[in-house]
Image (cartoon, rainbow, N blue to C red; front, side, top):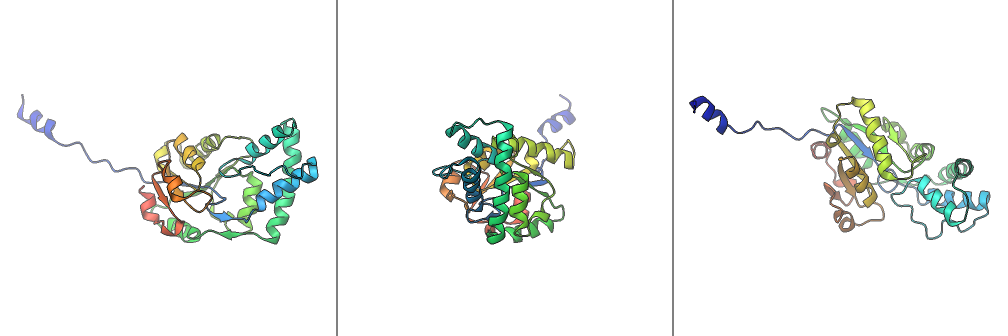
Length: 245
């Protein structure tokens, strides 16, 4: 064997660093903000006023679900045909009451959120901040504008027309590739959310995921779903660490 070839065969493979995070997709409720139940109250009021169902949301879980999925489950539970006209009828009154409830009490920004957004923006190669949420787009805007956060996000994927959070994640991936270029790899995307469904939808597009226990799930409950990182609040999040996650 040629000595040069022998030496080449023993040479270690070049080091390849993990790609840096180029897009950060944030969930809204329980991750960025708490609205103190404004969304649930607006859902309940809309069903009471428009469909004469005063207890429609009793016992219904909202965590990690899309608005479309929640509305469909209530329609089906009460023998209402889940057709586009009924969804539009519901959404119109829901958004009306959501705006009223938020004007009365917009809720609060969760600990560490403003600081993390500022720290990410200050990185030498800042990732693009965007939204991945089950909220209707208009509902997301109302919630975030009420707390002066809407302007921080470049694009979003929402729950207007899809029911499954994994499908919303696929939309987010498409939007991210449109914004940054088709070569964007899923491993260059970080999803930040507060429920097991957020972890699941991140995995559905092979993205990285940070789970934060500021919603209904505990650190232990989130850790059981094997996110890349789990934190009690975003106060403990370090922008440079997340960008290299």
